[in-house]
Image 1: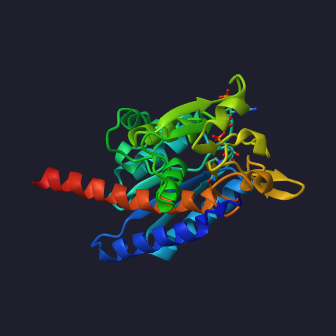
Image 2 (image 1 turned 135 degrees about the horizontal axis):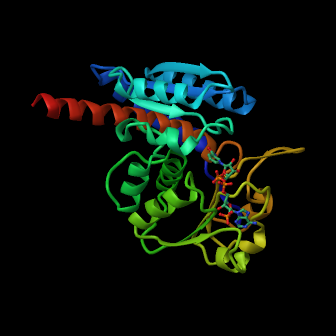
Length: 286
Ligand code: NDP
């Protein structure tokens, strides 16, 4: 079998068009505030890409760049100020932040209805409880890719490798909400190959180049590769793409799979956040 390649760029482009059309209809344009602390080159690239994606769809971009040595209290003041600013629909604190800053504490300062990364305890908790909220962008993007392929998740065996707060855990909740039978694997999982081989849908979010080999994948599985690993051969995922593509029914490439979806879902979340705030204001007025 030779797998269908799931084109994340094309799916993301469709999502961005959808967002652009929605923003064009909105009386008040949504605004995304990005906060970048320090000079990590990769973070600068990510934030630049997020801001240009905002500009493309008509979302206002409000950018703050802080020195690596900024006191935590100054960052906290900025987040609080953006939290109260009506022109700011969403707040994104680019991670990682320098070691002297408690990133968890800073994220908790973001009002839940502006938490476009879905990382506050409130939004993470709502997701686990199956209640509406803002959902972390990469897991939301994975779901959009699965839906774009028409993957039937009800009763499907879904195996996730990686249990991070950012990807693995929210993804488990999203798949469970769609009636998949979810198994989560991590560094202590016994016989990872055997567990993975049972999957109808296999998602790798580990950060280890080519960890998932063809022997670990069942015939006809749908394989989603979240991993991004910089190697001498360039960017590669967590899945041994060429070998696994011989067995899988469908597979995402790296780059060009999940990556573009993450930014597209950030735009979706910013619009959603703007609606949440309009609703709140409407309720307050009404
Ligand atoms: P984390 O480092 O937070 O988590 C990695 C997870 O993988 C942990 O749960 C860890 O287990 C597990 N793990 C590590 N080694 C093994 C192993 N040998 N076998 C099984 N499980 C293992 O990573 P993130 O979730 O933040 O990111 C994962 C990958 O996804 C990275 O490559 C990252 O760059 C990429 N990424 C891509 C995004 C995109 O937009 N495409 C967005 C976000 C991340 P344990 O918990 O036991 O330590």
